[in-house]
Image 1: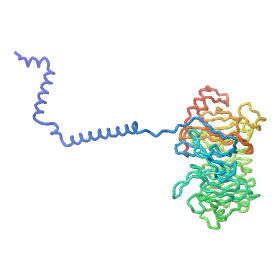
Image 2 (image 1 turned 90 degrees about the horizontal axis):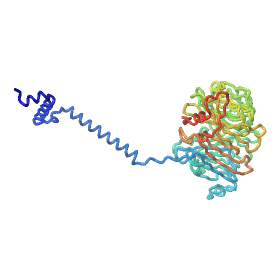
Image 3 (image 1 turned 135 degrees about the horizontal axis):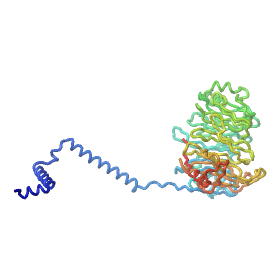
Length: 552
């Protein structure tokens, strides 16, 4: 007969096994410590585990401190639209963009002449030795239009340009150089408005300023590029070189020996030779910078000459042998296969020349182009050029493939004399959004010569080739216009500088910033063809979803 223990084991076998295991474990525990029996490898593994979790805890603690305890720097609040006004003033065709207050948002520099001195009553023309009215330079915040600095810079201004940062042994320098009256050359610090240097009356009183060329090769070996001013005195073109660091004139006046017009260009050949190009006598003229510097200074220059270009330039007339395009209106650099090529816009044709051998790549004939072309991207990562062909009601917008000259897109868009130029902003799909000014629908040809003619800003993107978006309709006189990304890869906007048409009649001068996306909901969709697959609202939504990116 079974005793009680055997009977319980038979009825609950698992319970019995569990009890046996616990008894055995207890017996072993009393006899030996399992930790002491672990091999050295197991002890090392346990130390590594402890170290891992300790490191993880430290990392999480640092993230917590940085994210929640240490406050992040405040991001500047950028207003969608702002405007600043100057009463009884005139302005100039000059806008420059630069991050002046270091808030990572582009700021705006402009010029104006105010009969009542500046809006800042602490400043007057007399403070800088000028009679009233004089020309003020001003910098305003791109975020909200607040004044960063403002000061008198010249009695009057003929031309003004700003350089990017230029490296020298003591650091990076930036400057805005202006030619003022009578014949003064002045450099201004764009970050403070302070005058870096000034040379009054160095050009003489009876000269016409053709162009101001910044960044010419360093002539006086002071470590900074210099600047060249081209003037016309009677029927002769002369050049003056000024030191980029001190503004002092380098050498004497250089005569280019021919009649000429504005729009000079400094071209560097693929052999590293520098040549000055400018329109002259219904053609294109060129000078070797080496020869020009040696004539001015009387010393040998280390610059090079290019044998191919020396043969292409007539030694007597200095005309460049190139395909006929008529009188040169504009010349500009465009990226080529191995360096910059030359795009010549003439009264008869537009010609793209190879930047080394001056061979024509393509020609667009029978053109009447009075506006400097604009580069952009119609196809992804493929450069195209915007050409405004014709004027008034006969104006057409042409988008050409830059490498072949093939017309990719064209559209009649009546314009008006003196209207703002076209512009573009790069989009994230490696194309460009283009902006064109034109007459609103229903405005006739007889209205284009009157003051305060209404004009519209149109937006175009290559993914919608049969659509224009009319963003704005403006009746005031537009002096300057820029489309810009105020912040890298975001905040696409445009800036308008408006003011009186005549400098002799002061009036209201305004600087206005508009964010592009804010105009889209109320924009008018202009259908260029019969294809209307999408509703107007769907089209606006597609434009609103466009993303922009900064060019490298």
